[in-house]
Length: 183
Image (cartoon, rainbow, N blue to C red; front, side):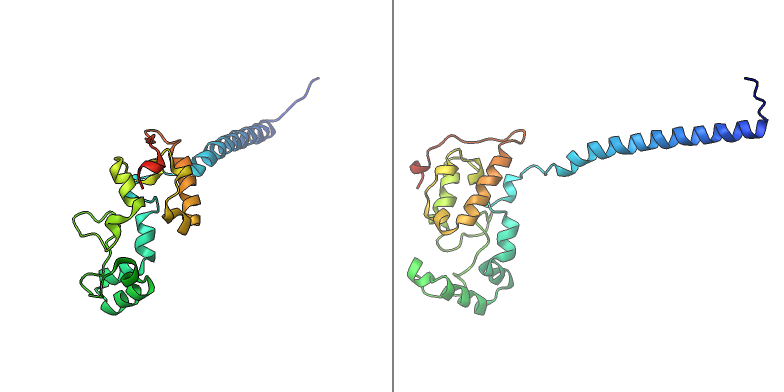
């Protein structure tokens, strides 16, 4: 086989081979990057217990949806009155309406006062009594029979899923308590 090839055609073939090799290497890199990027994209951020209310609902969610929280921030006596009536606070807590006494800063208000009834909330007092930041840390959550969960079953299911996710993150602390001991 005696092929004579001129320099120009030799260089053209080499350039084609080099281009094909570069393309294959680039595709291989892109493929590997996609394989590692997909699991990273699916990873969720660790659960920040400080950002959760004691019941496990994100505080930001409560603050964005709670009419009383909004009325408190805006110091809106008319909206406070509407919430007072809607939530039947007179019947539930035996208090008369006074705009200064009807407020909400959330269940983890820091240095602000607790709203009416908050001190008696079983879903708040139980985690506090057991040194937890949230019900998400309670080992007895799945069998908890507090009235709050019966009133808010969708939230209860959400919190149980959140707990399952929380329990897999590094440093998660699940407390071994009996739900019936902290009514």
